[in-house]
Amino acid sequence: MAAAGLEISPELRTGTARETAEPVIRVRGLRTQFDDVVIHDNLDLDLMRGEILGVVGGSGTGKSVLMRAIIGLKRPSAGSVKVFGREFYALNEAGRLEIETRWGVLFQGGALFSSLTVAQNVMAPIREHLNMPEALARDVAAMKISMSGLPPEAGDKYPSELSGGMRKRAGLARALALDPDIVFLDEPTAGLDPIGAAAFDELIVNLKTSLGLTVFMITHDLDTLYAASDRVAVLAEKRVIEVGPLDEVTQSDHPWIRSYFTGPRGRAAHHTAVR
Image (cartoon, rainbow, N blue to C red):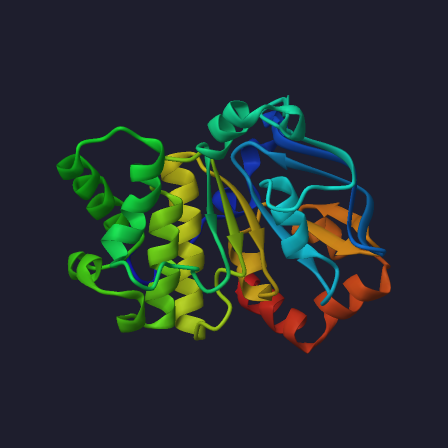
């Protein structure tokens, strides 16, 4: 884990390199639905290389559904999802598998295999996708566990023996197992106490910087948005209604955005960020 109290520099938080960034994921005209219930309609969104994109929206706006549509777990009924310049849903199985090995996913709650130790959980994608000797796979897993801020002894523990924060970090270690270009995080700080959430935010920013990661992060945590995101995308009305740096998005006159960012919690998070 990064040293406690380490401040996140404005350059890291605002992503000063984004002017020269390129989209690694481009979503256009996306439509998702369950039977007759439409979740997204004509949704457009770009994820730029090297950024942390915070995705926010009210309950029922389909934040997790959007992530699942991008990573192939929920096929959209219309629209285009391009990943690394390739039309994801037009690829054959081998082509999709090749792309899937270039991203890692931290689902809500960690979604660890309860019958496997932390080390075995981290080794699972390595065993599935790479022809790697067992001893080397164990070494890689130990390195990813350390990178995620867990002590070495955590590798031998089962998910039920971990705290909520440790399970999140174990899930992150598994998401990093294949050295991905992109990491998807679904509510990574949900359920954590303020100190644990702040430490996780710092970890994500430091990993993004040291590894050159691109991060798609669903969150409702305003402190996380201010601490870690380079840009913010707001879901409402079945589409992305605003996207941009946080200081620009907060100027929107949309009622939900005004309520979200200028309410008591929004003001407190902003005050903390600018101190």
